[in-house]
Length: 201
Image (cartoon, rainbow, N blue to C red; front, side, top):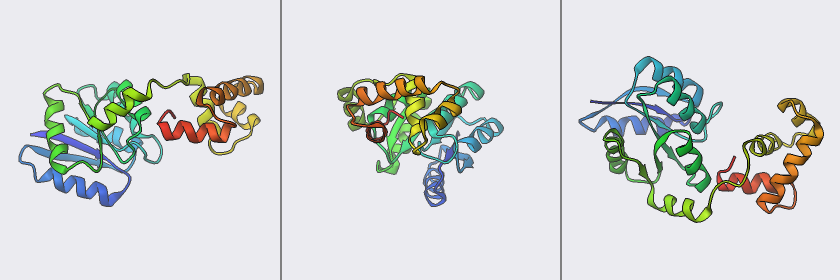
């Protein structure tokens, strides 16, 4: 049996996924979690073959959870299943150690097939998203620019961001200026929106 854990913050979607996978003769759902923090503990306790993670969840997102799972449950393969087919998400997920990236409007049979394929050592990526990621190019933002832009997303002041990230206000301004320039935005609000739309944050 292929042992699977699910992390999805919408309980109805999580229940539907568990039910669909439960119909497969060779797949067993051994744990469920409602966010990216909870799934780490569930995976450590159940030692699954595959973790099926949503990207956008409360607390730790699916990409951060994938990185942590790679460290703490190294035998577990991560499949990202998301509503948001953004090219930047695909790149970040692969860098975090995910071996499959599927969008939620795929047929259920494709999900079960993808789980079997990753157990055979294959990578499985939604074809449309793979093409979009190739045409979009790499994320132009440095890790620190992403940190500062993410911190600016809630409307925080320069001072607030500096305190939160332990940087000087001048350094925060420099990173924000670079991020605005690289995203082709007119201001930091637009830079945040553009970066989020691409999946760069």
